[in-house]
Amino acid sequence: MRDICFSILIFLSGFLLPTGSMAQSGVSIGYFDVDATPPIGSPVAYAPARSIQDPLSARGIVISTGDETVVLCAVDWIGIANRSQDVFREKLASAAGTIPQNVSVHALHQHDGVRCDFTTAAILDEYGLSEKHFDTAFLHTTINNVALAVKEARMNMKPITHVGFGQAKVEKVASNRRILGADGKVEIIRWSKMTDPDAIAAPEGTIDPYLKSVSFWNGKTPVVALTYYATHPQSYYGDGDVTCEFVGIARNQQENDLGFPHIHFTGAAGNIAAGKYNDGSREMRPILASRIKMGMNKAWEKTKKYKINRDDVKWKTTNIALPLADYMVEAELAKRVSGELEDPELPRLSAAKHLAWWQRTTKGHRVTISALKIGDVQLLNLPGEIFVEYQLAAQKFQPKQHICTAAYEEYGPGYIGTKIAYSQGGYETSKRASRVSPESEKVLLNAIEKVLK
Image (cartoon, rainbow, N blue to C red; front, side):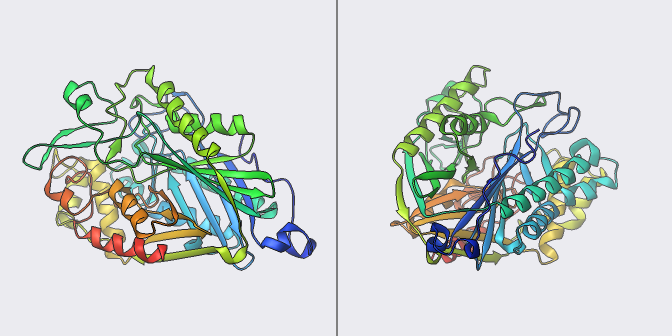
């Protein structure tokens, strides 16, 4: 069992150490790591789990300045959406002694991972379809276990005196999924695994090639590291062989090699995958993992440390409403969910997820955009399967700072393209994949710029 492992084992608080490093910096951190592996037979993204290739985890940090406490969590699941996000954030906030607005929960988006969406599950319950896609008992148990681990991490905090940052290019992993033709429309969709020679020969396209590493230190001792890289993390998938995939494998190897906790976040990878470099063969998973691991090593080697204190740590959020796509019509979606109307563009599960997001949005739900600033490092948190252009835009908003983007937070809106992408065609901006309109770009860019200021 790894339900609560790697939790920081030393209890330190400011009033107990008036002259120590905690008193000097005012910043403390705790780490948690919980098993999030589904049982055999439990539904994962495309099939029931038939084997466990690698265990899944939910891991993160609790960081506090005394005045404010923030929780960042990364889970080896395909997505955490709608009411599930609420439950996760509420329980982790309660465990950490903070508010849900100060909690950010992300999926890494492994395609042989678990779907977590209590709102969609409730809609499908009406038709006896929920258990095919969701193991809600397992989901609730895991969330409760994470909350217990957060509570223990909060009680076992370590003082932090420095933050470290390094970055390095990852070679031959990421490539843009959308290959445009001469007419400016999507001509080839380059999926996570490809054997089409034209897709393989096409240029990488727009990506963010850098893997970024952020580390927290107590004097000369590293306490925990976070890494960020933008790509769909799939090598091969779909048969129910549960795995944390090549990003999780690299993360675990790095943690073992360096000897302290490591958390990885998937960046803005809605239109990014390994298809140019991955043919879907079994041999490619460890090769892709080794390339990510090499990027982690290089970023770690390039790390520079900066002294911090509590005044350097700031948490900023803003809540936004993402405009709905014009095909998000309740009555039409309900017909597809019930089976009254068959639509090859919108299968029942997709229609149910659309209806869930319609309900959330029309009832006033807002999406949280947030950033944790630690000196010149900013950890930006974004929703859905958002395009890499948003990550690149964020870096341009603050070019003198180190912006690290984690996406796949609120999974409810599905893919979030750029405005122009909705006129170019392709899967990501199709009726099946995206639940928001092209006008979402302006709303999101304004929100990103606001939290990074």
